[in-house]
Image 1 (cartoon, rainbow, N blue to C red):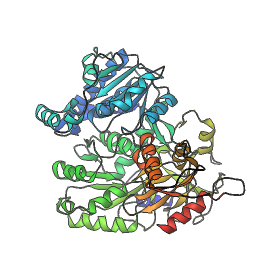
Image 2: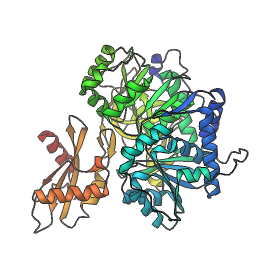
Image 3: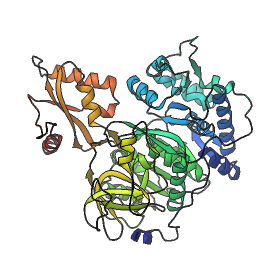
Image 4: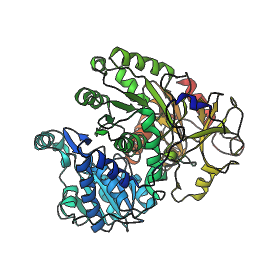
Length: 563
């Protein structure tokens, strides 16, 4: 097929050559050439590449002694701390799957994630121990490993943490045979055995959770090859070089954070600056203290930075790149942030990326110096893109609206326990190649620029995180006071979108502020904060289509108009 977008990658190879290596093997190879360079930076602690590989080997030996091996799955529920990087590559070394989950997941969600993926071990953070401990009630769960923020801190920082935030964390109960601390795990490690490959690079190595075709959170299985393919594609375009640094504030359970800010960064011989808390204050503090060469974030984060006076005085002259992803970047926000970059000494612009968890993260990038308003960019090196008639593999002419499809080395292996959804999303076209049907509607112009118009799947993007209306509806309809519910997204100046629920109460139930508070509290108990409806509107009935389904598009249009 034609690839008109190649003109924007002058000097960069149009195709990529993905090494026949697992992620651990690739890390070990990069470490051999960058042994003394910093691989990870965390609150003053630095681990060189050589130290990181030693920690990974030690962790892998300890996990292997617990029974972790080929075909096993380990649930990882950690913020951006060194433990998450060490555990991720250790699990990969053993040929097992790392099931990456959000540290703020509820107990119900964690149980679902663990059950869906067959996890027998879990690694979580102490501050959320009460949510993690019920995992041990699962019949197949063998051990819960509990990490702590101070695990890799120096003596001074460890003391400082202990007398500040550490005081808020409850001590772990003693004598629980199902629980082991990270320190105990690492101390119990036997000497590592000589390395041998236990997994083909194309086998499932990572599970991330996203919407899938059902608009409910589904496990997406990705391979080492997919993650390595992302690194090979991004590094030459972004220009990541050994000795540089990337601010890793995007969380490790997210393809953007794990794939780009951690794995791709390390594969480039650069330092991943781990920030365990997402927010404007830690972002600004990290910019000032660590002076990263590359920054990344969702549009909401960049917008919030512009509203903080302290940000205007931050020196950004060291920046070699700034990436926005996870949601649409409006032309106005890009203009404002680009102006701030120039004022504060940077010689780069904010570059938008588009992607899906089904291909790790970014697959389309707005080429630096060639931004087109309203466009999400052009395919990255090694990526093909086209637009087809929805629910078919029939390609459409340039400028015709249809479903965006991409073909690349980063494609998922499939959805966990859902071959039907996998077959619907990964389809072989007339060219014989396997294509990812994104579920997103858009167009491509004659120069290869893609324009996003909307989603086929019902997904709401709140601060860059995916919210699945069907999940929220299912939960609220389980409340005894609710007869029927429809959840939609509405525009929001700060979060880009917020969640609104139209609720029909059961007969005899009073629709008042007390019920709103009760339903929001119920949602907070079972859902992550982004999924909790910000507004609830009561109705005596909801509109329905001719086939009896709730006409959510009608309610969505009404809510958007009101907003």
